Image (tube, rainbow, N blue to C red; front, side, top):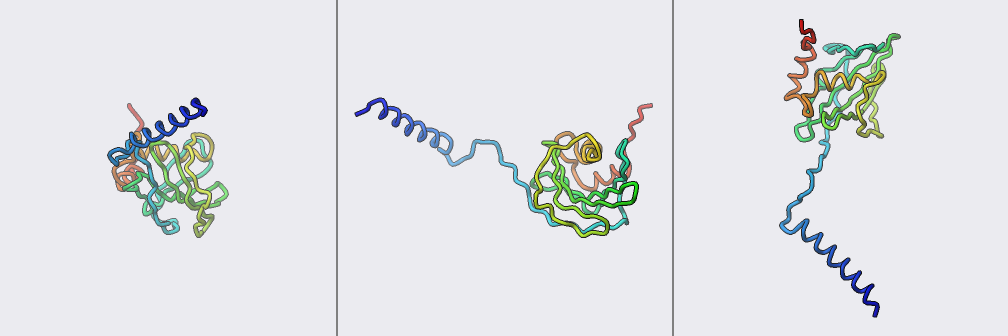
Length: 172
């Protein structure tokens, strides 16, 4: 009999059994809580009425949020919104997106051009928010309006009020 192989096998069996016992001895999960995204219905495609415009420095585009689409997930803390982006030539792009304040990331659930309708983004994944180029509007939304540090603001109403009445950055 090969005692070395027997001993290695015995250690493997005992080690794996001990590990399973230590992790589940009282039925509780001792790991980090698992974040799960809650399901949200697609909002109505926005018209031009009631849009709230916001500035993005050094951008050739105009940006606006549809306030009726703004929500904060009660279980996942995702700030969801419809953004309308208009180019200098008048091309209208519409996106239904979500922002997570921690980690600073976004997801585009659906998109549309002109009068719509939305097309579901079947390849939607969470991506880091960038501060460069035409996509930096998400960074502005997160920093100035949606997030209070690593948490979303307390309500969609507070976000809408903040967008309608931006805080002054003048100290003098």
